[in-house]
Length: 183
Image (cartoon, rainbow, N blue to C red; front, side):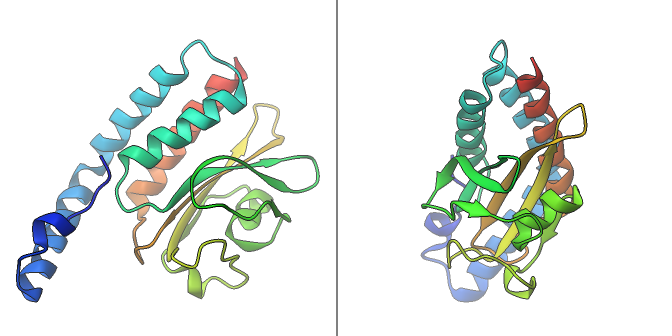
């Protein structure tokens, strides 16, 4: 289910390729709210009755990576009381440890605010685990008692891949994840 318009557009002239890609993205933007609502339901069903954080994180990352188009990394960094440590993910090998306040993940963890980065090369202090990543969204994961569990991190090779609808959708997904692991 990976989103890729290349097979469809491979034989079209350049201007037609650009038009087809624009139309595909426009449709995707209109349907994002519906897509994320369905994805939340799928995630809830997948995690239903299971409170183990690692098991849920592994399946959650696989589900999102499989369903959403134009991703090259989707996964968790878990807070160990001192720093973020890579957890279950899909994609290429990643940085293992990230200090709070460092890079997009560390900034999200420290500020407890979702970071939506259109172009990671313009984010001061960005940590380039995968040189192919060009945009990123990171959602902080906060437990009911206010303590930090970690962050949910998603990267794309496409500049500007994530928008406000993605932010809302990712935050809803993370809320479902946190409910599941709370028991």
